[in-house]
Length: 143
Image 1 (spheres, helix red, strand yellow):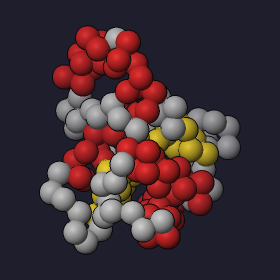
Image 2 (cartoon, helix red, strand yellow):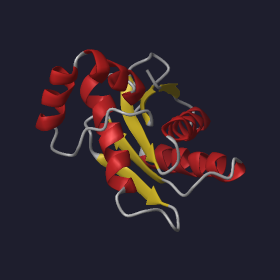
Image 3 (cartoon, helix red, strand yellow):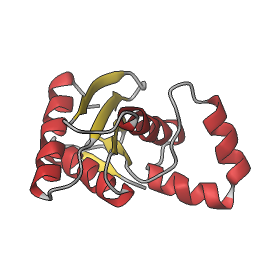
Image 4 (tube, one colour):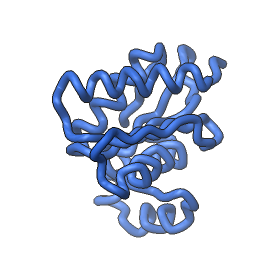
């Protein structure tokens, strides 16, 4: 298995920031977690609002907790609100079932971490995450 290293997490952050800048999106916060859910990196752009890093953390945590991109968890929340609500209540670091939380998979499709982005629309947050994961040499799984 390819581990998600700090170096890879930094490359992911830089690529994601580059994508956001190229598309002239609102300021974002980006959180990168390893497969255990340990924080590897967190970055917030100038001008980002106060809670964005926590929302980004919740998106990444949700993806890891369920083994699904947070977009898919959002769909699940519509069909099974009590289940998703119960899982969210158990999550210590937050659980945000909205697009922008993307699993990071290695070449063998194993989950090696997750990235969460918050600050623009959920669709744009997810696109930033996908761009960063791809540029760092991993496979994004947005669900």
